[in-house]
Image (cartoon, rainbow, N blue to C red; front, side, top):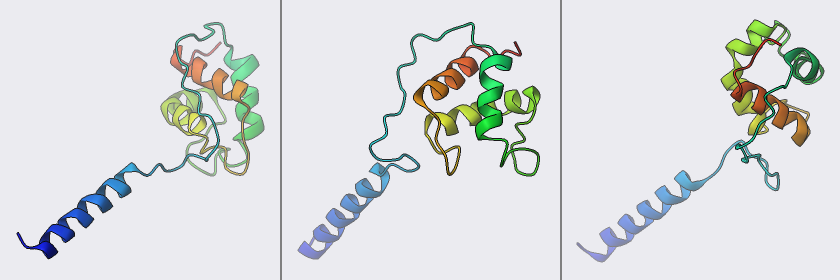
Length: 116
């Protein structure tokens, strides 16, 4: 293998590592909640989750844009997507949820997303 081939191989490997190691859709300097060992199992959809969704998500996800989050069924059917987007802080666009709101949503979904 000549020197040019070795350089090309090294550059390709370096470029590949660089491209695959980049993080996307995460704001720098924002701590993502990863402490998932203890959740409050009494979180109420009606009292806690629905008001957060109504205040922060319905503007876009009120029937005109997927997913439709106006009802319990719409939220429950898309709970994995909601959890991922909220925990990664990619939603809501143009706004932000408090760490407490994110934790409430995450825990409620991980506890079965009950209609309570």
